[in-house]
Length: 478
Image (cartoon, rainbow, N blue to C red):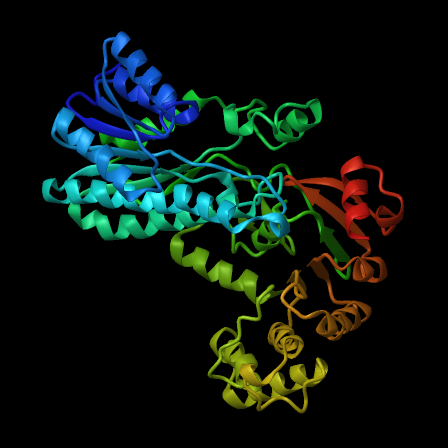
């Protein structure tokens, strides 16, 4: 045990159990005076008593972080007992697992009140005390659900934790000039009351363990160790970060042959889009190797300038079509396509225009070249995006759910262009939920869930899947 928090005063919200309790006890053990803020009076009193019985200093305060009067009472209790606040840990949070179509307004508001409003107004109260002293530490609890969807329907919870993640970034930028560090932790599955249901069955436990590289469920003290680091002097140069305990993609090996059409499907949050973005290093992997046409592009082996040139070389050979069209609203279709040719390929304006016109004709937009995005349907905008990639003469095309943002009646026109490209021999990797397209075009189908390739094979994967998770998914979508 060290005394690195001697003389420091910490408020921990939701400190009556789980990770909040572990953080409060660990801070006290290392010398901090702790304000145990808890909505349940019995839980809060119990933790404060535990700390005092162990020789630490703690005071308990009852409060709901979504109620401003209660937030004020928490901070007044800290000032009355200890005279200041050096550390705030925003741990209080709730989750309601329910399909989105069944959420009530009260359930939505309650989760946003505790998980978002509570974090903001507790941080505001802390900042008012910390700014004059030009020092302070704020640690927010986000979740891996801020990055990938939860294992069960929890749209409100996932949304709230995404908000906490962004709030951390914005607060950090504003408070850094005042000497205040703001960071967040995003724990993976941890053994607490909140996860008890998910871990109650052998199947649920196995599913969770399959996503965790360490092969075990996290304990509250695991997260407490990270929180204490962020509260310590050792983290004085870190701000605006969310420390994440999740592998979005793990142990995936994929080799795409020239002319092959690979279709990737699976549940949302399974890592499909992340894998696609790793293929052109829009997402940088933590480990592994990326080669394209026998040239290694990752791990990086050269200096920053050479690395930038090699990245441009890689991306100039790979076209990517995103879920959103990403067109410049102030440019017509022709100039949206031309811009990449002049900026990246360094083509003359005349040559770029000629190439752009040919690409737009190829996707059936010969009569829409002078139309702005606002004058085009969603399907037409996505075809402009495809033309923009085709104009670069890519050797590989990546499609990231290109029809997900389209109305049903517009999906066919985009899939039609993609099917024609496949017939013409374009090498393609497609993330999609369009199983009809997968059945007609896919040479190889990959079912990805939990960041791993669960099943791989030909089109028979759709008709005779071998893995139970693949079967369950297909039964739900077909």
